[in-house]
Image 1 (cartoon, rainbow, N blue to C red):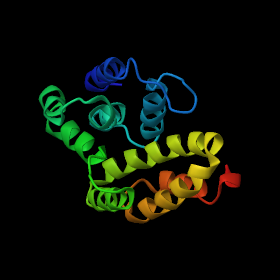
Image 2 (cartoon, rainbow, N blue to C red; image 1 turned 60 degrees about the vertical axis):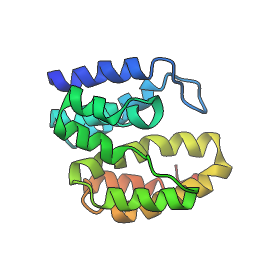
Image 3 (tube, rainbow, N blue to C red; image 1 turned 90 degrees about the vertical axis):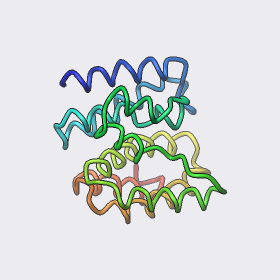
Length: 167
């Protein structure tokens, strides 16, 4: 891992230091590490690994997007921006807007989003089967627009989206 990816790891750990996973109570950084690790199995560029570490800083921690651009530059700033769900409206409107945003994202960003979906699916299905029904439907719709993502991760994410029993 290069310097910028390690810098992003440190930044994300600090940003999420008081943040825990909803269902398990584990440190939130565990999710970030899983997303970065899954991403690193198919992408080797530091900007992609850094973006994976930072993907929830703006959305969940109140870090300003401008701070990400200042600290990490245009490429990583773009990645974090495209990965951040900042849309407004009811859930259906937000999810539709998110799909449109991600449909236009570069392949490496779509690949990180697949890694994020893979990481989140197991936890949601295990701990909240009622919400999992909604989540899996939304995830399948999102996977339909992530046409530039790494095909291996798409296949894995799809295999996890069939039903809660498929995990």
